[in-house]
Length: 154
Image (spheres, rainbow, N blue to C red):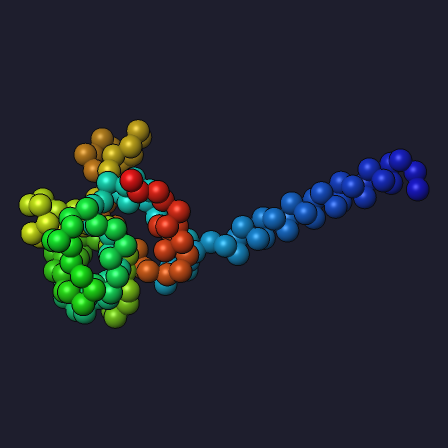
């Protein structure tokens, strides 16, 4: 084989390897119920002081199924407790129905009641100079929980 043929074969192998790697990355994307890709907001998770997985029970009620992180000690809701979350129509990513949701929250009164944490401001976000981004909760899919666990809190 001539040197040119070896170079062509090497370029073809490199190209096919690159295409294979891109296909692998696409297969690892977490997709929501609507088919769109989902990414957990790292700043939102870092500023939240209570992260739970809860099952929507109708209205604004969620049954806590797991507590992933809490800074409230004895005031932390436990699995089986019910939480009331107001203004569901303002939550991005929420679709009513019996499903599990990752809910990043904070308390304004030292653990007596909780609210969903908005995505905090970052340079250039939110656009338009707003003080905070949207309030967002995430379906508790395996890919979402894997992204959550990759964020180091503490």
